[in-house]
Image: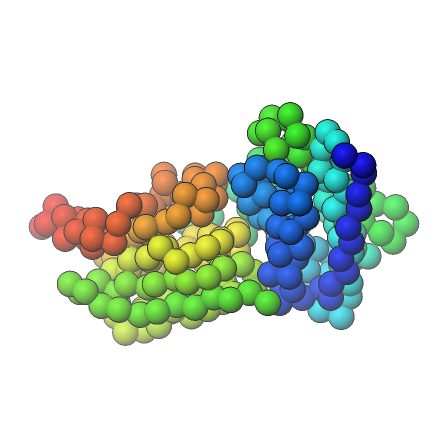
Amino acid sequence: MARSVHTLSIPSSTRYLGRVRRFVETHTRDAELTEEAIEQFKIAVDEACTNVIKHAYRGDDTQRIDLAIIIEDDRVTVLIRDAGRSFQQEFYRSPDIFELAESRRAGGFGVHIMRSLMDQVEYTSTGDTNEVRLTKFRNGRDSA
Amino acid sequence: MSNFSVGFRSRDHVQVLDLKGELDAHTASELEAAIQKCQSEGGYSIVVNGENLQYISSAGLGVFMAYIEEVREHGGDIKIAALQPKVYNVFDLLGFPMLFDILNTEDEAVDKFVKDSAEST
């Protein structure tokens, strides 16, 4: 299979999350991933975009989020790029649901979900651009 | 655009919320409003029926987290029923079965409220 790339740019608003999931579903299905891997990608990309909207852009819906799906012989990768605040990985701690329930708080699960569902999660920041790369290998941990 | 709706029913003093569609960061506020509506009417025994729930992300799960303690403090609970396997997997990924009753059918969830009530008396 030749390498193919599909791109999508959306405003930084949660109203476009459904559009993003359709985009991911279409191209991961075309890439002949398993149904399980397709669902995993939909959730992981949704979580990544939601985090960009909430944290990188602090709810500013006038910005842009750029996505790319890269389909290769041995893997599928989704890139999510933004120009907001960068994510400080070293300060992230997976939440404990009992602590969250006691404190009546919601949120903080997104990174944990991405790391659990994807074979690789990479965060990079270059200049004003942040990028998260979500990768599943076709013969990886959870075979795609 | 996400499509999501919440239907309201009552049975045996239990409020049943029928979730339909996709629950994400954009639509989570509708679930929150539905739970708040139950509470404002004094309904703290809530069954969430997920038979037609096609998708959930952490935003939706977060709504359950935000209200479960308050509901239980009022002697009630939020029980979850009839989840599709792909949706259940997301609940399971975050350890929800440790904190919530997640049942196969709505009937089991409603019956559990009756059992819980009998055990506490």
